[in-house]
Image (tube, rainbow, N blue to C red; front, side, top):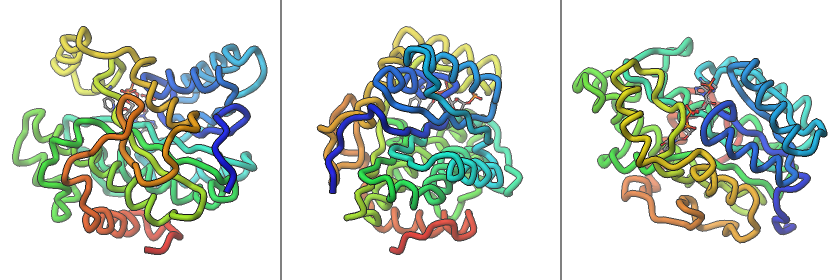
Length: 300
Ligand SMILES: NC(=O)c1ccc[n+]([C@@H]2O[C@H](COP(=O)([O-])OP(=O)(O)OC[C@H]3O[C@@H](n4cnc5c(N)ncnc54)[C@H](OP(=O)(O)O)[C@@H]3O)[C@@H](O)[C@H]2O)c1
C-alpha cells in the first residue's frame, strides 16, 4: 500500500464547512493544495465558502458544493450519489457537521434529530462513499467527536435510541447535553468499528476532540443558551486552533495508519472507558445499519 503523502492534490469531502471548525479546516486545507467538496444544507453559505477557498488557493476553482441536509437520510443519499457521479476519487471524508438540540425533535425518518445529524449521517455517508474511498486508497475517514463524550459514562442506552426517556427525564439542558454526549461517544465507537472492519483496505478511520471552540455551535437553542455560549467565549479556542488536529489528521504522514482512533491536540489520546467497549461498537454498527436500512456493505 502506498504511503500518505500529504493533502496536496487530494480530494477532501467535508461536511459542516460553512461555519466554525469545518470552515477553518477547509481554508487551511485549500491553502495546502487540497481540492475540497463542501457538503452543506445552505447553498448560499456554501458558495461563499467556496469563493473563499478558491481565493485562498490562488484563484483556481478548488471547491465544489454539494447541497444536502444531514438530518434527512434521503438527502444524505442524494448527496452521496452526486459525489459518486462528480468525483472520480475521494481521498478523505471528514464527517464534521454536528449540532445539539435543546428540545427533542424527530426527523422525517422518525429518528431523534441529534442522533440523526451527529451519528447516523456520518454512518450513512461513510457507508455510501466507502467503495470510492477504497478505490482511492490510501484514504482517510475523520469524524469530529468531542471531549463531551465522557459525559456519557454509562455508554449508549440502546433501549432508548429515540432519546425519549433521556429528554423526558431531565428537561433542562442536562437531558439535551446527555443526548449530545451519547452521539459524540457514538462517533468514537463508530470510528473504532469502522477501523476494525477496514483493516488491510488502505482506508484508515480517526476521530478527534477539537477542544472548546468559539463557533456558532449551540446558537440554535434560544437566548439563554446563546448567552451561556458567550460567557464561555473567553475560555474557548479560535476556530483555526480548534481545526488544527483535523488539519493534521487530514494532511500529515505522521498520523499512525492503524491502531489509534481518537486524537486531541495532534496526539493520540485514550477516550473514555465506554468508548473502548468493542461489544458496544459492534452493537452500534448493527443498530445503525437497521436505522439506515442496511446501507453498509462491510462485513463484521
Ligand atoms: N465548538 C465546540 O466547542 C466543539 C467542541 C467539541 C466538538 N465540536 C464538534 O465540532 C463539529 C463542528 O461544530 P462547530 O463547533 O464548528 O459548530 P458550528 O459553527 O455550528 O458548525 C456546525 C456545522 O455543521 C453544519 N450542520 C449542522 N446541522 C446540519 C445539517 N442538518 N445538515 C448539514 N449541515 C449541518 C452547520 O451548517 P450551517 O452553517 O448551515 O448551520 C455548520 O456548517 C460538531 O460536530 C461539534 O459537535 C464542537
